[in-house]
Length: 152
Image 1 (cartoon, rainbow, N blue to C red):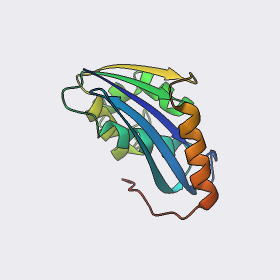
Image 2: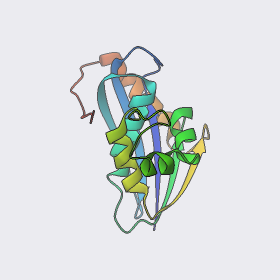
Image 3: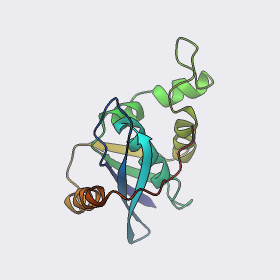
């Protein structure tokens, strides 16, 4: 069975952490679900990673194939490269021996992807993209933040 995940973040700051909204569309088992959540004190990279992690943890166990749509270069390049495999085989350390940034979240992502065929698409249109981006923008306008979790 195949699952499709489309992730978006309303946080665009590359450096300064901000509070904001993220969202994903998940399609699996003939059903579609839209989830909008909040993140606190996150930059664009971390907010996209939290969104991806939360989406992946909701995939049904019988899904053996995952299609991920993202607008995040950070997510895309870390998933298509061998980074996850290298980090895992190196005890989640960089080549300099330091813990990778957002280590605990990347470990969860790696665990969720184990044994599954993954395809990732960057900056492509997908069904519901405009709706998801608009919903995140509308939430951001009203900015009453109740935090979603962050692991580390």
